[in-house]
Image (cartoon, rainbow, N blue to C red; front, side, top):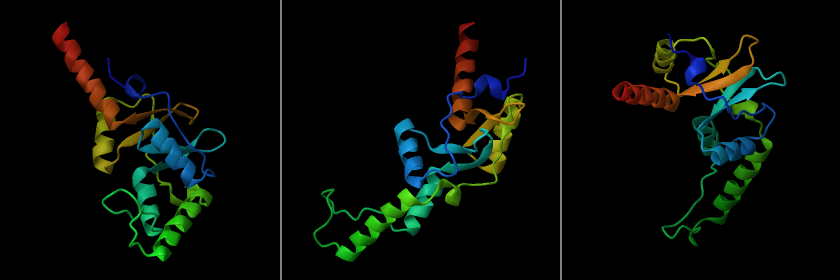
Length: 162
C-alpha cells in the first residue's frame, strides 16, 4: 500500500482569509503554535500561504521591533521618535491585509499524492508545509515537515514492535 497525503496530513487545518489583518494572522500563528497558514477564499480554495517569515520580513520593514534594554523594559535612553515608529508599525499591522504579504504561488497537493513525492517537493521547493486539497479543489488538510517526521518515526517504531 502506498502512503499518501491523506494518511499523514493534519486535518485540523488553521487557515485565514486574504482580507484578514496581518495582526490576526500573528495571533492565529501564536495561539496555535504553528509557523504558517493557508490563505483560503470564501469557497475554501487555497489562494495563498502566509508564514512567520513573510510576517517578520514585512514587520522588519516597518521597524516593528521592540527597543529593549537588557532588563526587558524599554530603555530610558531610547529615542522617543523610534518608539513612535514602533507604535505606528503595530498599528499598520492591524490595518494591513494578509493578501498584501502572502505568497501567491502556492504548491498544493492532492490527497492521493504519494509520500515520496511530498518529501521531494518540500526539498526541491524548500518549503515547510504543503496544503492538501480534495477532488473539488478545497482545502482538506496540510502536510508539514513535522508530519513527515512523525510518520517516519511511527513507522520505524511499528516495524520494531511487530
